[in-house]
Image 1 (cartoon, rainbow, N blue to C red):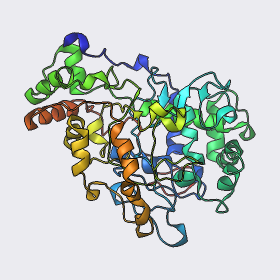
Image 2 (image 1 turned 60 degrees about the vertical axis):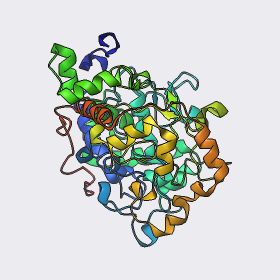
Image 3 (image 1 turned 120 degrees about the vertical axis):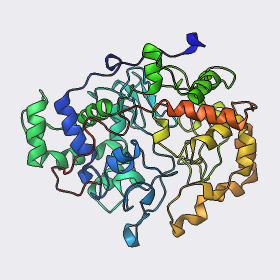
Amino acid sequence: MASDLPPLLSSEQFHPTDPQKARIGQLLFYDKILSGNKNISCGTCHHHDLGGADGLSLGIGEGGVGVGPKRTAGTGDARIRKRIPRNAPALWNIGHKSIRNIFHDGRLSVSDIYGNGFNSPAEEWLPAGLDNITAAQALFPLTAQFEMAGNPKENQIAGAVHDRIDAAWPIIAKRVRVIPEYAEMFEAVFDDVSNAQDVTIVHIGNALAAFINSDWQSFDSPFDAYLTDQTPLPQDAAEGMKLFYGTANCASCHAGPLFTDQEFHALALPAFGPGRTRRFDPMPRDVGRMGESDALEDAYRFRTPPLRNVALTAPYGHNGAFATLKSVIKHHTDPLKTKSTWTRDMANLPNAPWLEAIDFTIQSDTREMIRQARALDIKPIDLTDAEISDIEAFLHSLTGASGNTRPMGRPDTVPSGLPVD
C-alpha cells in the first residue's frame, strides 16, 4: 500500500500569491458590490464558517436571505426564481498547479483553444491576462443569472449578460474602481494600474484568485503527519486507509495528493432540482460532462471531487444528495440499491413552494431514470458497516488542523459599506 500513497503537499506546489493582492481579494470575495442587485457575495455560498461551501444540497443564489443551511429563498418580487442546479463546491487547494479543470462538469479548463489560456463558457470573450484557472473561475458566478447577476431588467449587469457575457465585466469593474478605497489599493499593488480607470475585471479576478489560492491551502491533517513522519493514525482511520488504498478501491478515482483524478465518472446519484439544462433541452435533468463535451459517452458523468477537508463540506455529490459521509460512502458500495431507497427528505432544499413542482419532477420520467441508472462507472462492492465506518474515519483524518481557522478568513467590513454575510 505504501507505494500507492500520494506525495506530500507543500506550499511550493501552489500558484504563488501576493499577500497584498490577496487582501484585496478577501474584501472583494465578501463584498456584495460584485453582484447585480448588491445582495450576494462569493462568500455567501463559499463561507469560511462552512468550510468554503454553503451546507445546502442546491444553493440559494441571488434573491435569497441568510447564510448556510438557514438561508431562505426570499420573499415577494425578490424571491429566487430557480435553485442553483448544483451543489456549491468547496475551494480547498484549487490553487494547486496540477488543477486543470474546474466545475462539476469541467466546463472551465486550461487550454490554448481561444488564445486566452482557457476553454470556458466565455470562449474567445474571456479576457487575457488572468493569472491562473482560479482567476478565470472567479468571473463566472458574477455573470450567472441565478447565482449573482440577477434577472434581466433588474440591474445593468444582468441586462448586459444577456447581450454577451463580456459586456457585464466592465460594468462590474467600474463599480469597484469608483470606490476610493478599492482604487487606492489597486493602484498601490498592481504594477499596471496607475489610476482607477486602469482597473479591469482581470485585476479583480486575479485579486480574488490570490485570496482563494492562498487562504484555502490545506495540508496539515493527521494524514499529512502520517505521510511526513509516520505519526500513527487512529486505529479506525488506519484501517480505513488500508481499505481506501486497497480492496475498496477508492483511490482508483480519488488519487494523488488532492484525492482526485480530475476525471469524470457516473455514480447514479438520485436526480432532483432544476438540472443543468442546455438551451435546446427542455428537461430538468443534469447530463454532467456531456453538457460541455457534447459526447454521448460523457452523459451523467461528473468530476471526481477532491477529498481534503471533505468532512467540513457536507452535503455530498454534484447535487448534494447525501447529507453525511457515511451515506455517500455507502452509495459507492451499491449505487443502484441506495438510489432506490433514497427519499426526498434526504435533500437539504430550503422551502420554496413556488419551485416544488420542478424540484423532483425529473423522477417521474421513467425513461430518463433508466438512462441515468445505466450510466454507472463503479461496480458494487461488499463492505460491512464497520468497514464503511473505518473509511469514514480515514476521510476525517484528511481534515486539516487549521481547517476551521484560515489565515485571513472573513473580513468584518468591506469598502462598499454593504453588509458582510
